[in-house]
Length: 106
Image 1 (cartoon, rainbow, N blue to C red):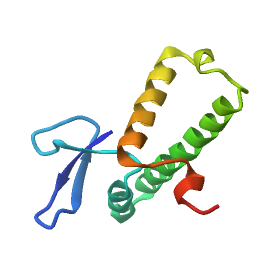
Image 2: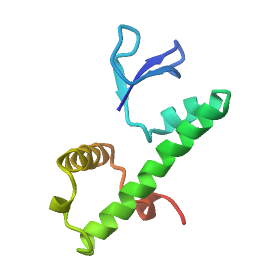
Image 3: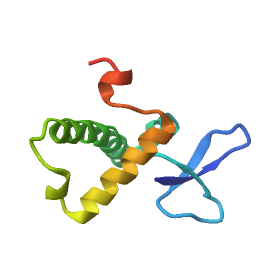
Image 4: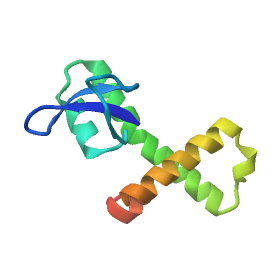
């Protein structure tokens, strides 16, 4: 989850990993607004961050398929990984974001 600051037009102008007086609204890392903000940033580090955030979604979907097919068990994963998966699953449910095949073409 990112904490953001918006300008008067409602555009994201600042991201933070932690809440600050300027950044109090939250957005999911794979939010289109976060991706758009990162795309406007110069330098390779912004490109890597944007790429990493997009790739996280792919890894989540692969993990979901492995769990669904019984190839791995949820309890095989370390507790911190289980917690992160549950958090992401909750965020996806709240935002209506499903697996890649649900809303993206491959």
